[in-house]
Length: 267
Image (cartoon, rainbow, N blue to C red; front, side):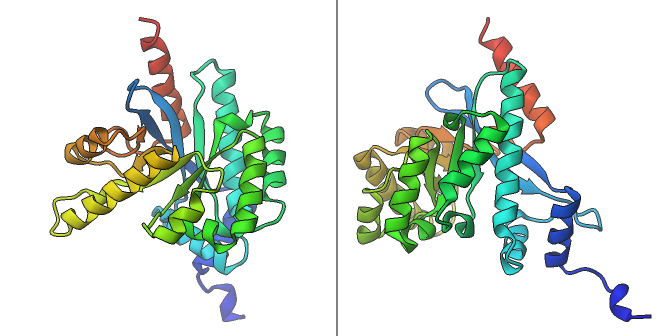
């Protein structure tokens, strides 16, 4: 017997099988508006227990998908599932929110990326204003002409675009200011009790000032402490995500959270 038949699958092979078998799942982490205190959105992450029953990190999954040239398929699967779920919430009468989905660089590079997103929205019957795409700064700066065209086409669909993983560079930030972006997403870990806290806070202040000067709304993720919350609140950030508010949950628990807010708004 061929020994390879009994060999354990690599992560890459497991990802390919998970797509075929539809065994991936999504988690939703609520985004809280600092002005109203209400949940206004949910950031989507990929979740999948490997054959041993242990959850595999999203970064490892997307890395494996990239290696096997199926990252586009994984990215579109996430978009499709998130849009369909958001439409179900709306049909159930829950408060409308936007879902923020990470956009893999390989998918964003495609010339017809906006058309692909539009097709997914149409299939899900979801209006574009209820979808946000998280796009890494490196993907935007890789080809500014393409980024400008793609973001303009997404803007025409009323899809919101968020730049993530930003590192302050005078030239890069100047180029970003010309693109049709709606939000900038900052890392709450910039503010921490570590020895590097002062450097992180300085960078956070620079990024916040840049966002305010260009009219970008500021979303902060990984806000896990009161100190982080207070720092970004003082600097007039728009939304926060993190365990300080809510942990990532499945669609059923997210439905319960939205239903609770719907009832509270009637009081």
